[in-house]
Length: 360
Image 1 (cartoon, rainbow, N blue to C red):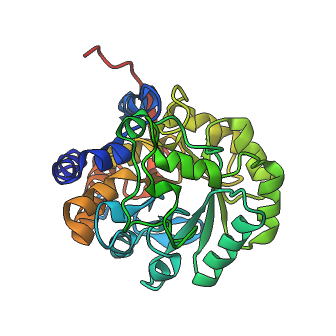
Image 2 (cartoon, helix red, strand yellow):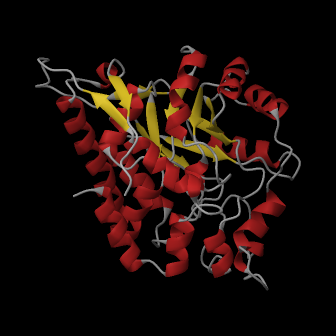
């Protein structure tokens, strides 16, 4: 009936260490929890006496039609939760009519995903190996992806204590399809409390990603370019000045800097600072159609949703992931109509009120 039901069903079938890898945040998980609290503080002022007999959720994202103001966010190593992994998830996104963002750390190659006919965006981590990031961009372009999504908030992986306590490592059958073909540090359990994935990505990712890197990438590709992980309005403005097509206001789902501001709290300021110079998407904590309505009312073009489709994948493969996207579509249509909005554009005209939540 809702995404919380899907999360519980997934938790019942996933091994504890995989469940922690998917659900956990960094540090004390303050930001992870705050994302939900901040969204729940946003109240929408509905309008009445408007014709909502033909309520539609259709919109455009990066200039391409989408049935929902939503893209599936990049999540690594989805074969951890289902044998088909990203392949089943991308088919679900295709059926829902929304873009699917494939991670650099996908366990299925991008070529197999674009072959489904889905709209696929490629998420890029900046890599230490000279030219390797550009090689990945070229590979993604050749495969037919429709956008490049550069993640800018991961110079290295945040301290994810659940993974460290679990000494989390990939099983032998799960690979980073775009980085290597054989076993890597990600498959070897550390000697002490640590995450094998953090060790692996620490060796692979570059902490030298700068604005000059963004400029070089902008020159390298003619595809729409999206920066994911922006929280400061000043950074959003500079991104627009670099020719970026969209920014994703995101704290990486509470998985990077613990104590970082909830994404939704800075969304209105970023929208105002950009003044329409590029699209703005919201990521981190979106769990319902009401959350999508909140984001639209605060000025976002749409949202990215990461964990919930993977819960659906764990629960029931492609059908489970499709169910998640169907739930979000049904809930958004319901929320739009009850708020007096016949379409997504009307939601941007709604007013919002922020209320502190009562203590639990």
